[in-house]
Length: 384
Image (cartoon, rainbow, N blue to C red):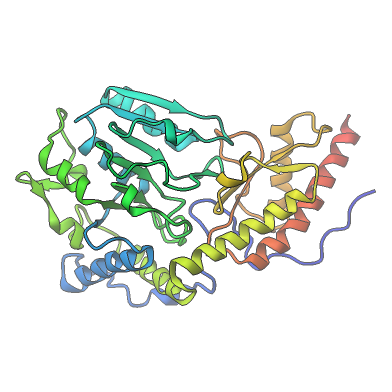
């Protein structure tokens, strides 16, 4: 017997893991103060870019002696900038437990051809970071956007390490507590957790990272958009708002609006609490059902932003086709957009739970997931 459709729908059905949901109540009118048609090098442009850097430091509680720069090409550009500029001085360790981490492995091993040890774990698992050699330069993601697995803490990273730690934190920044003293390079894009407009990356450098830039010159040529030094010294302008190439002042304004909203919900603590509540609603849903489970096997490593789910019902003959069919039903009903698993990840669903998502929308969507599952099980049985 078919299950009755739920009576309530999410107010905002956008659960994409990037670009993510805009801040609650967003409207284009909020961007009226953007200096459109003005140079980003004019005072008004520089002031906006500096405000974005200062707001990033404030909300993320980044130490005063760390540099923050806005760079091209989203988080990808920021990670590539770090790897091309800093790696090669010593052996590297590439740590990957999901598709983006695997991409950084490819760049280092096949493109830069650096001497590197590769440490990998399957989707749903994480590499044991206590076994990593931190006298090498270590490149890793903090939160696996495509696997729903995150670092439980930075406790494994020693304070007296000789190498640099280069951390892709794009789906962790603004939702998880990053231990800045354990991280030398941190990269992210504001199109993730704060729902900003895409194409801009942020790179954060510790004093140790700056020292590496000023003491080491890679053997390979560096494209202009990767160069962070001038005359052997850090180009300080990049970290004061003088971007390497032309930024979108509309996107910067959107980020400033999102930072203001972050302040209004209690800053980093408020953002983390919102993400935790959202993720817990889904975790509790999974615990009360025997046909769906979290892809992350260890509760300590479950992401509170990119929550990845797998179907576990033994009646499902083709998991990939089943997951796609459930996603299609949710999409058609307008209750969950872009909730499919990443293309390289195991078949299932991926529901974004960052702070710009309202818990009430998660709670309104979950009965529809019940409905879509039952509908598809029944359709599968009829087709058999």
